[in-house]
Image (cartoon, rainbow, N blue to C red; front, side, top):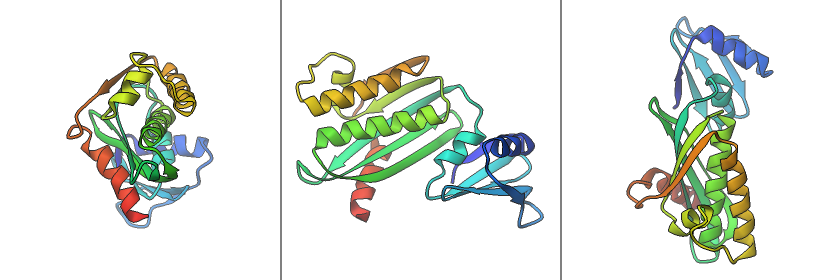
Amino acid sequence: MPSVACDPEEARRRLEAAGVDVEPGNTEYERWRASHEGAVAVAYDDKVVVQGATPVDLLAHLRESGGRAHVYFDGACRGNPGPAAVGYAIVTSDGVVAEGNERIGRSTNNRAEYEALVRALEVARDHGFDEVDVRGDSELVVKQVRGEWNTNDPDLRERRVTALELLSGFDRWSLEHVPREINDRADSLANEALDDG
């Protein structure tokens, strides 16, 4: 369960400004609670805890814009092509901001890796980060997006353009290839999505 250290009254104002209904808490310790898009935010004295299947939107409303995040992405495929899924984790010095996974139907491994990168960048953008340090264990995706390798496949070329457009929306970004053990959370999330399917 992600939590946001913040002033609960300021967080309440942000949610209400975004059109989210805020209700009184259910216990003496809860200051308020809000539900939105399959997630629930519960405010305590110095933090707001978000729970549910899709906490990304609520977290984006609660956090102040700006700052720097480490973004990890991974795509997984059973067969090539075959059933595919993506996983991502967004981390700051405060801990995990968001993580998620989803099945994306039938795909190749390289397409799944690109889809994971795009989804992770969209989530980082929606959280309002100014700077992202992006890490993935797909050397092909990293080197193609950085322009070090050619992108001959038209489908991958299109995904590369999308990734570059998203990256250009940040004030500063980096993209690095890392070993799988450093990218283990995103890898686990992608494989969990496949296992659950």
